[in-house]
Image (tube, rainbow, N blue to C red; front, side):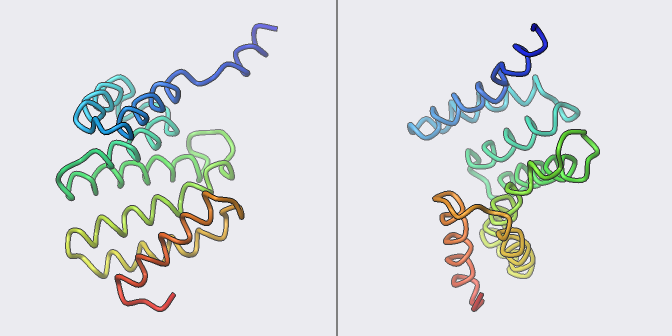
Length: 157
């Protein structure tokens, strides 16, 4: 019974990340960045890859410097790859839906840094990975963002 309750219990770290995301979306970017960094210090480079992926993904959005944003997005991708290739245990298929957004974010980072070829490479990977997205609002939003970035980069999709 205790085991079943533990399995049903919400993930406290993901809950805390979600609370900081709401703070960020509420407009307090600097406080959100500070709290995300505190969480990162708790989790560490060797922490649960799902936590690292989620946290780095959102931490990237709070950065002022595009190079810092890129570094956090690369951390998110690295953690997702750990999950996807089974190094971290769990179900690799459960993270398949992360990759379109992760590669899209990297493509956008590279655009900001004036690195068009790197941006195109990640845009292609985002487009390929988008096949794993559901036909729902989230999937449509990510596919639409991929299309918009393709237009910015002069690609016909």
